[in-house]
Amino acid sequence: MSNNPRRVALSVINDVLNNGAYANIALNEKIKSENLTELDKKLVTQLVYGTISMKITLDWYTKPFVKKTKKWVKNLLAMTVYQMIYMDRIPTSAAVDEAVKIAKKQGDKRLAGFVNGVLRNFTRAELRSFDEISDSTEKLSVQYSMPIDLTKKFVKQFGFEKTVKIFKSLAEPSRASLRVNLSKTDLQTELNRLLRDYDVVPSEISETGIVAESGHFADLLDFNDGLITIQDESSQLVAVVLDPQPHDRILDACAAPGGKTVHMAEYLSESGHIEALDLYDHKLRLIKQNAERLGQMDKITLTKLDARQSFEKFGANRFDKILIDAPCSGIGLIRRKPDIKYRKETTDFTNLQKIQLEILENTCQTLINHGIIVYSTCTIFDEENFQVIDKFLARHPEFEKVALTHERADIVKDGCLFITPDAYHTDGFFIAKLRKSNLNENE
Ligand SMILES: C[S@@+](CC[C@H](N)C(=O)[O-])C[C@H]1O[C@@H](n2cnc3c(N)ncnc32)[C@H](O)[C@@H]1O
Image (cartoon, rainbow, N blue to C red):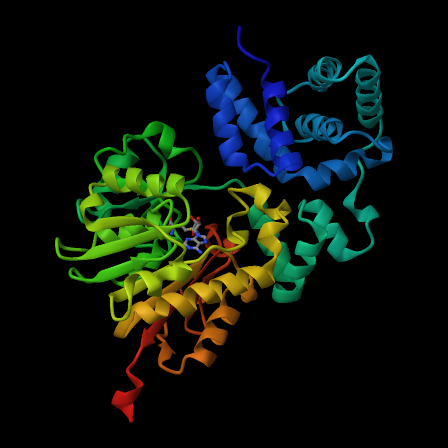
């Protein structure tokens, strides 16, 4: 007999919201270990992502009916209300009955009675309107389930109107995107091939990108031929900006899981090489899997190293190009990874900036004269992007910014590529390119 999908979903939600687990990892592990039908796997996925994504809104809806209760009970209530409000095909009575059963099994009769009472009261009452909230920023936070501090931060940097656009876009479902391996095939051939089975279009911002409005290519396609790989459209621009030449020696300072490592490797000949670093063995293994699948492993060396030790390990004049795809808050990924918005450690922007600058400071010493550094993040906050570049350039007169261009002028800002998630419904992204010049030459 298959397991109860709602109980499975609740245990993932508890793990993520109460214990800080990563939603994608916790969900994958649970789905693998539980006995679920294909239909139930889909239900669990929707319940987990939907509840986590809308948790603040859902808690606000039930607030008038709940004084104080255990965290898991609050999560159970949120997951049930999510079904009532957002999943038309689930009858309210079924959602309530299932919740009461879970409360009885995980707690006791008294808790089951409490859950039943809250949900019945919620069902009988009229759904609250966001217009009850007089403060416009708080209203935005509740309506789009974004923590209030983060909402204030968005409004401060982008202004109210643009924040609304970004939040609306983040609340829409993600699209699936692929990158075509141009060293093996071309965009049109792959588009034609995919169009037989999928509703796909070329990316508006990446010349190597193909996009489907919905669906998960990973489940449906055989990637072993290495002709295509899954990569967000904005992330596909990074290797293009770095512009690897066939013989380049490249340092990929923060490489795992290797999406950009394998992309850069496609440009290299046998004499080109990539040193790919990351902090963790299990993450380096992901790069290996990726590179082997795409037939690029012979051009890549994997090293477990803190990028802030690069100069000590590799010395001066070692690399022609460096990619720093920096550890960051990941705010640009919220659409696909909604748990990011609740993580305290990823919203410590001062500490993140410190690490980002330290990585730049150390790795830049390994670069040849006239070498190139590309610095990129999947966040859209200035502290991790423009401020990092400005601070680095202020301390390093031997570096200059290379002004980037793109046929979509709206993603170019101050010579960098800066893509907010609402612009082309991609991940939010930042890319800057720096060139080192020998100051003595200019004297
Ligand atoms: C944004 S992800 C990189 C994504 C990767 N470039 C790709 O395209 O698939 C940042 C990575 O940096 C690693 N990292 C964090 N701090 C690091 C450090 N000090 N040195 C090296 N790697 C680090 C993290 O483990 C994480 O895998």
